[in-house]
Image (cartoon, rainbow, N blue to C red; front, side, top):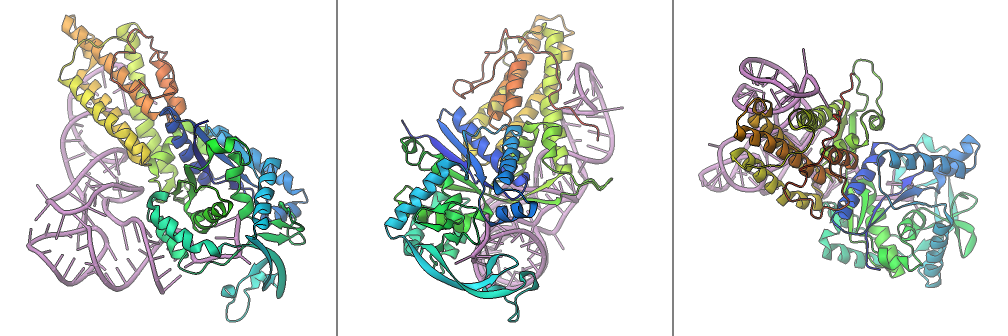
Length: 510
RNA sequence: GCCAGGGUAGCUCAGUGGUAGAGCAGAGGACUCAUAAGCCUUUGGUCGGGAGUUCAAAUCUCCCCCUUGGCACCA
């Protein structure tokens, strides 16, 4: 089995409902996965849910239910989000699954046997109310802030992972693999963090404090805590311990938010893998956040609009288009209903959707519903061909370098070119002419509009899979599962049947 | 406080040394196949502030301001 392209999202934490950040990360990862598949690369795409820990246990107690009930419910919500967004993940890993527990315990046992995990006392200040340790840094003028309630000094025994011995190795590794973190400037955060000596990592919690977790295989009085649970999901889902693992690992991209790069993904995780003798992931793709100063956006009525509601109102492809078009991967981005509607109306409805409408209408009216052949090539056609040639040249470079916002901008500049071409040719005028050359121009114009739209649909496929398929069907063609042979300008649509006229992006009266 | 990202037209953003750009919004026009869409033309910016380097700075250097993150046994 040859190596697959392995791409993962961070797994979501089961302590709240999905929001736009969760949706974005999945869409971004899905776009990359789809693009790779269309490029002919076998892909394994993993996402999932992180279910253990204090917060889940506490909210279960508060609600008077078992923790797993909360997790099941949230797993349903997150998986349903994936469906609504048309996410093509190949696996959905939940950290409460037996396969995961098995892997976690196996790696913990291995490291314990090798002496890389040891037992030690931890002395610190513990807030009974918050059920967590607090640090000296949080003390204000010698007193603990009120939210912590009573704070007592306690000594607790725990297990520690020998993180610190790998510090020099990690610094060297990151410095000598500059491209591992995208965008690169994020490496500075990690190296900055690594300037201070690392402490060994506390990886356990006594069961009296936390029972909702995976038991340490070598001490039933403890569960493992966060890192050796959540991060390990990546190798669990890659089939660690089975033959499949070879074909999957290492990850090509871990797609994560900027908040969890350092230290979890860029420090703990590489060191854990190093200690286990496994290969390093090839890249971390670090995205920014959606800023929603406009999250309470409806000025007139003051209602708070949940961005995820837009999926149902406008369709998943419109939502996918918006987040991919607006976000410069790595930077933060602004979200507002106005911005969404502006993109929807002008790019999707007016430019793309309307172009499809006018083509279908004219195709039935002036060409008996059959896609004509192009028979002539004059200046107008040459301009369109040149534009496509230019776009074809750059579009995949942009995709491969995560410049999706620019890629979409350029695809829609090409759609605008098709609108411009249509105006120049004015097929509605040509249709009134009896001249043979005008009939040829008319046929050619409809053929060019069709072919231009076909090619647009092809390159839009990773971002708007449903719309791309619909457009191709309306042109009498069928949806694609590979770019191969699809990118050349030609006459392949000729003779096909135009679909019935349809509004691809209806404008909602608001 | 330290480190990093961002601060460019009303809005969202491109643009890293050589006469300020795009899309949207606004204004005007011709057209009519189309989702009152599209097309053409056009208004609009002392490029966060200040100083410096240079023949030339949005772009390089320094200082400052605003903003978003990181520097937590936080997920």
